[in-house]
Image (cartoon, rainbow, N blue to C red; front, side):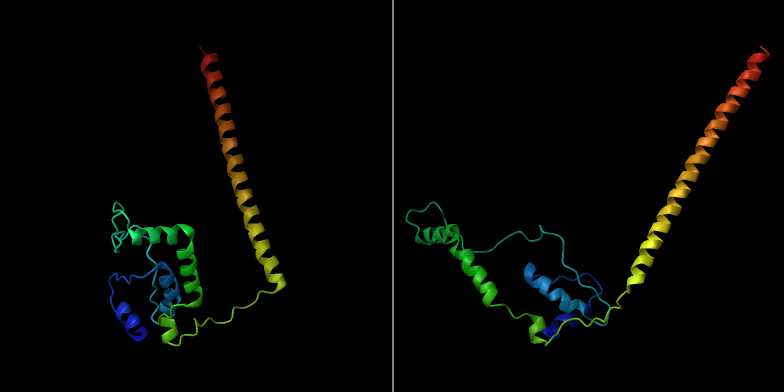
Length: 165
């Protein structure tokens, strides 16, 4: 099945949806995104998609409903959650990566930065911050100078106009 999933999903150029539980989707994303075609698969973000659940309907108004009573006991006591967690831990589902003998994504080794390069990057950030501060200070100083000149010019013009009146 793993051999058929990727070719069928990746050949469509439109949007295509594969629906499964959230845990399975998260496990499959690494497997599907590890491809040479450059196709990126993402988890959907619409949590309100298909909120209809299917299951056995149990009428809670019947008298002596044995199934409902047992389900209430299992769910309220936590036994159901305990068994579900136990099975999830011990009986892991074997998904596509398992059957395709996938060993994980192949990443090239990252270059380690030496000690000096870390300080060099920090120095560049500090220098850019200082330059930005100087530019902002210069703009404020020029703006203050222009406003001061406007005030002096307005006072000078006011003095000239009223001195002749």
